[in-house]
Image 1 (cartoon, rainbow, N blue to C red):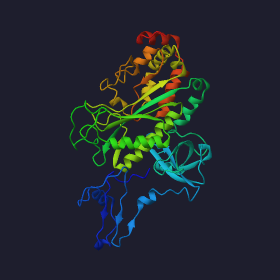
Image 2: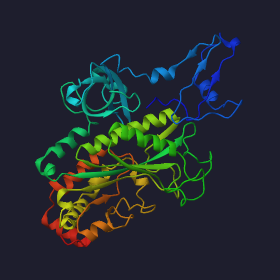
Image 3: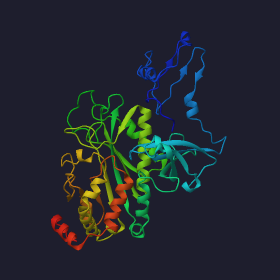
Length: 432
């Protein structure tokens, strides 16, 4: 896939001969020119995003696009590895590129690297080096060929995980024999909002104004109902190319809001795939000139928030009699409700209000086919007596390493006291 540097309409910019000595264009000047379509005829469209051809006075053409699309495979064994890690906020993604001498198939074949942690809020200036360990590899849809994206986690030079490295603890949970034997499956529904770049207002909304009320937008089609479908589709294909286990996409309830689903994924893989999918989405929106927001309540008022519903099952839940195992898991989750809420994303209190298909943040609840509960169980699961549960509490900006490992810990490793279990079962009307 080519680098996306302009919208799908192919534009041309020409500099008159007399302008050869003008100063270089500023980013603002470029931005204003992007909005001016060639008025001499209908603009040609392309199936992919295009890069501008800049023609100078002496007819020399800057063929930037050709270089971006250049396949170097016939000329060198070297590849480009884009090392990706989570920054100091715990939600921002950072990356930088490195030349590797030959194609690789496993993270263990890649060298560790480092970065300036004082510039990402992850280390002090006087001891700024943070080491990144390659953990998962995906194909690079932007550069193509044998080039790769590398999901990394972060350590001190002494080998200790730094505070923002949540993958390390998650890997410990998933490597415990009891959890590994249960083969935990996750299906994560990542909601996100697309914002206009200069005004930070949802895509498709009138600037300073509001569209019609919610209703026609969810899974809708049409220029007045669907805003950002090209970004969602580009992301879908990029994920498939990369090897991410993406299972679907759809437009969400609030206009300008979308969702993609990843899974079923086993154990730590779920977090790796979600983080890589988020990185691809950041890159695609960057190149399309749109801002990606994972805020759980981007617009206050009578508008849906953005969550990251997490579907979860264990081997015992998927086998005959699994519904009883699911109910025992729900009981455990009710007893650790506060611990889960505190780890389920920033600003989630603005979303979990008991309205707009959410439960109250202060009260645990569960139900069959009830999207207003903390935990939803599907009708098929109830009917078949086995299946999965959906945790509807995680916010769109949650860390999937934290959420998935905490679900496994609470439902497989953690055991409540008999007294607490009995009281919770009575309160939730659960017979376990």
